[in-house]
Image (cartoon, rainbow, N blue to C red):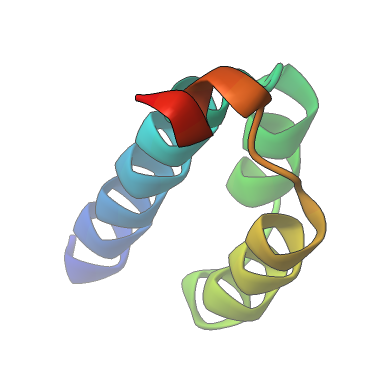
Length: 60
């Protein structure tokens, strides 16, 4: 479905961002999967805005 594809695309973006920042994403993914697609972007924005990238990401 279009909804499913959109959710998957957003989830992949979140996972990649978290991986680059060195975050544990288990809880985040559970939150994302439990959220309707139209509510996912605000959730993700808030997560990304509140997470500090690890120092090694800045050095790279």
